[in-house]
Length: 219
Ligand SMILES: NC(=O)c1ccc[n+]([C@@H]2O[C@H](COP(=O)([O-])OP(=O)(O)OC[C@H]3O[C@@H](n4cnc5c(N)ncnc54)[C@H](OP(=O)(O)O)[C@@H]3O)[C@@H](O)[C@H]2O)c1
Image 1 (cartoon, helix red, strand yellow):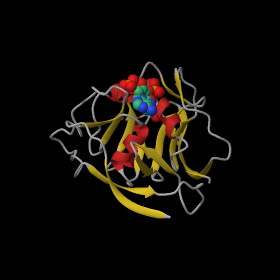
Image 2 (cartoon, protein in one colour; image 1 turned 45 degrees about the vertical axis):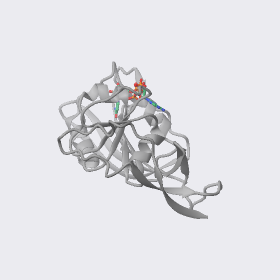
Image 3 (cartoon, protein in one colour; image 1 turned 45 degrees about the horizontal axis):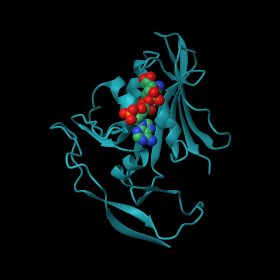
């Protein structure tokens, strides 16, 4: 039996930490969430629900967006291993207007909130704050903040790994070259993802091929 109710989430009095820019604070400290009264195994009619802070989040509208190299490398010394402006433009085009969720280290590597997107940073440090950014104590708390909207997990490796089972879509920039990396995207679970779109390109400046690939959750 599926019922709906409104749940007050515990909030830091200074959260959300929105700046004067284009980021808007949450309308209120209340988010409408799908609330399941009975535990039941999920099937195709009832997408998986996840518990957070006493609430339950329907997290079926979640996309991982990642660029990885031929060995699934994604980072080196807390930065990107490559310079591929076409991928940055693709990332901006896809994520603009949507909430983005990232680990604290990825936020540190970017250094500022990305404009025209609601920026949510996951950290275990309750004192962490930054203008224009909302902090969440866990992935599921971050999902509770965005309610049923489509959100994008933008990294890094820790947060990708934690969200892989929850996400319903991945948008991957597959780079046909191997770079020196110290951070890697977890191997895909066989059968978990089905490729639904692929757009291939060649970077003349870098001399390698890359593809924008969309994967949908297979079950
Ligand atoms: N190629 C790409 O598409 C791409 C995208 C993004 C990032 N990157 C790269 O990936 C690297 C960073 O990835 P990373 O795996 O080292 O770090 P990360 O996932 O960005 O951040 C890890 C941090 O997030 C917080 N965190 C993670 N899970 C949490 C949880 N369940 N609850 C609360 N907080 C949690 C913790 O922050 P606290 O320590 O503050 O508690 C943790 O130290 C960098 O090299 C970056 O450039 C690449």
